[in-house]
Image (cartoon, rainbow, N blue to C red; front, side, top):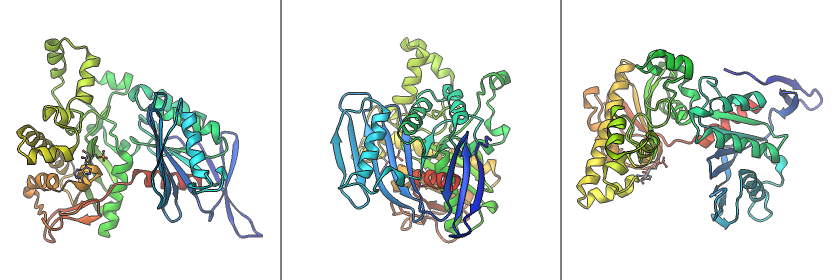
Length: 434
Ligand code: AMP
């Protein structure tokens, strides 16, 4: 783990206020302990930038938005302040620096803005997809951290360079605002070797760090902690399986608050069947189909990432579970087959993680499908009665609410906990910058 910032609390004896002084590289920063903190959370993709401005003292989302089609024709900025209507603006966004400047303009706008000036942004939290083995926690960003993120970019060639562009753009426009990197992979760094090593020549791990990393870590960590809090239990005494079922999907086994296994691997392609990603397959399929269809490895990976999952299984009906449910409901057998196969695979992962932890106290569903798809939860839990899991159909009849959906006598408590990655990034950023 990298520790880059020296933190020194100092009390002002006249006012009694505590100031936290720290240094990022050779730059000196100072924070007042009891000051309200507005954190700008940035999630940068190659052609998009999602953001939220969060007041971490009362956990209010002051504003949120999305810049789309960055560097492509037809740029669009969507902005929404708390309680306000969505404002959509067609605007050319040639690069990420322009996107960040649009964000600042919107947040400080005299009509729809939520802050008076840039100085009211106290810190920026960046979602970074891959931290490799270097980062097991969020860190304050400095030149060394940027270099380390670059170093592991070949593990996430689509994501990390975009994340770095976001950091550079924020740095250019807000040079004195501290920034924090929150990694998708960090929570999973506690996995033991037996969980993260693949059965391939060890030299590939030694030379290239080929191993399981896992993703959606911010969500898994947030949801596991929230599960324990919600049940009024100490996470240290719990075995929790978190099912993050969205368009991308992963399962994690969390024992005593630490991740001990997770379904995504070196990349987010492994594990569950997803919206368009295949999840686990026999790797020999790649060579076999590539030979039959005259495709390169790159083209095969494109098939596995973009044309597989429930989209591929349903014969192209949709990658969206709402569409699939509707199609299955009106008699589309292929859509029904895709949903059935999907649920079966989730249940198999839950079973294997119950084995990995030698038991499970709670199974928690989260993300788009996990929070909203009542029948998917019912179908998945139908495979788990051998664990003593009993779903209550009335309790399960909910969407997007923190709640227990199992019966009172169920040996395993099953819950729905809506994930909130942005809030988690904001909290971690505030904690590191206070
Ligand atoms: P996410 O990637 O977490 O945004 O999840 C996206 C997936 O959640 C899509 O496949 C949606 O169909 C699914 N989803 C979102 N809302 C609902 C809902 N009300 N019912 C069923 N599925 C939903």
